[in-house]
Structure formats: structure tokens, C-alpha cells
Amino acid sequence: MPRTSEPWLDYKRAMTTTASERAKRDRLRSLLRQYESVLVGYSGGVDSVLVAAVALAELGPERVLAVTGRSASLAGWMEATAREVARRLGVPWVEIDTNELADPRYAANAPDRCFYCKNELWGKLTALAAERGLRTVVDGTNADDALAERPGWAAGQRWGVRSPLREAGLTKAEVRRWSRDLGLPTWDAPASPCLASRVVHGLAVTPGRLQQIELAERALRRDGWRDLRVRHHGNLLRLEVPPEEVTAAAAAWPRVRAALRTAAPDCAVGLDPLGYRGARAGAAADGVAMLATTGAEVVLRGAARDVAWVRAPAAAFLRLVETGGGLVAALCRGGVRFVAVDTTDA
Image 1 (cartoon, rainbow, N blue to C red):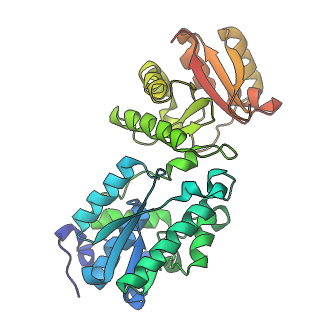
Image 2 (image 1 turned 180 degrees about the horizontal axis):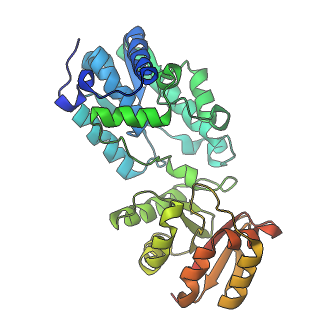
């Protein structure tokens, strides 16, 4: 059995949980051995890192190659993470350039955008695997991923890409647990989809918009925000953080706002009062009352004019954000899809 270069990757000593979960782990190891040699489509996220780590332990470095696709859609910090984690794993790693932005079907940003990105990526990785003599191309799709909502997975199927985590039945929670047991640095990493996923569907994906998103998120990460999305609506940037962090973001709004405005001086900016993991229930009447008592103004923004940009005096800003579900319920009755709250006196 090949030995890995770092003791914290000794999967033999990893803590296990239930018999069912142990069986899934054994199944993943068995699948990787059956593949004989693998090229891992590798983003540096929790799923692909686990695949690369276990493949390295099972097959050895001469039969594993992790590959990251580099383009304007890949955030610089994700590229750096992918490189550093591969170095720590001791897994061979390379980057290849992709040019999905040159495909007008990708740039148009319809709901199937990911298909055209992944179709190009998997085509290039399949060719590279053949060139390197690697038998199987694999990805990090897990058993929880809703395939109907993942056109990129369909592109992988077109190229014969295997999904060993999914085939072994490993869920996202189980992937994180095994990664933690192995000491992998990505075990608790937030999900980090590509920058293009921040551009609302129907609005063209352009290098300029991707750069604005990356600059804004980079500045906020430097300021300590770890789990966030900056959504681009064309003439407005809408910040989403986890619901439990919305109040903290509102309290820090002057500094957060400055980072957003510096990244995109031609855009309005606002904080989503619900956060990005789903809406909290709220009464529309509460939202209407709050709008009236705070003297807030509402302007339609976004390329599709489907964002209610709510501006209130700084003294009322936090109360307005905390209305959350009620505010959104009040505003979304008229066809508005998103809400972003800002201050009038910033």
C-alpha cells in the first residue's frame, strides 16, 4: 500500500462512526482501486480534496493527478487554496486554462450555464488523462447533490466522468466528517461555487462583472467574513451572508458598504436581510409598518428591475434589516424577487 507524505493523512488511523458509514468509506476505497489510475477534477473544495486524498492513499502519487481549471470565473483565493492543499497532500497537481467566457451560450447566463463550462473543462481533462495514461476521470459530486439542478454534472456524464463519492453513497455531512477525521484542512470549508454563479441568471457574465465580484469578496474576506456571496444584478451588488450573520453584517455596514462600493463604484449596494440559506417567515404587515415608520425609500434596481433597493437613515438601518422576512414579504408581493437594504446617509 502506498504511503502518503504526511502523517495526518493516515486514513488507516482515522476515526470512524457507524457501520454504514464505514461501509461507504470502504466502498470509496474499492472504487478508486478499481479505477486503477485517476485524474481528479479538483477545485480545492471539501469534496474534491477528499477524493484526491483517498485516491493518493490508495493508488500512490504516480497514479493520481489533481487538475484545476483556471479562468476568470475562478476566484484567486480558491486557486491559491487548491494549490496549497495539493502541496500539503503531496498529490501531483496542475492547472489548465479554460475559456468558457468565449462561448456565447455560457456568457448568456441561462440556467444551464454550468453545462457549457463543464463541457469544456471535462473535454480538456479527458484529453489530458489520455495523454498522461490515466484511466479514469473523476469529480467530487456527492450523494446529496441534486443532479436535476446540476447541468454541469450532465456534461460530465457526456464525457464519461465518474463520481466516486456519489457512487459510494457518501453524503455531504459524511464527506465533511471523514475529511475532519483525516485532518484535511478543508473539512469545514464553506461551499464556494464559481464567481459566475453570483451573476443573476439572464444577466451576461462578463470579465468586468466577475472582477467586481472578486474584488468585493476578497476585501470582505480580509475583513474576517468567511461565508458570503456578492450577487451582481447589473447596477446593484447584493451581499448575502448566512442568516445568523445578517445582524453582524448590518452592525458593520459602513465598513462592509465601503468594500462593496470600492469594488464596484458604478453600482448601488445593499445587504440581503434574509441571508443566502433560505427565507425566514415574516408577516407582510410588519414590513409595511417598518417601511412607513423608518422613512425608508424603495427603488427598483437590477437589470431586470426585480430588486427592491431599500434605503433608510443609518439610525433605522439595523431595525429595518432585522425585520427580515416581513420586509421581504411586503416587497415581493409586487413581483420583486430580491431585497437589498442600504443607508441613505452613507
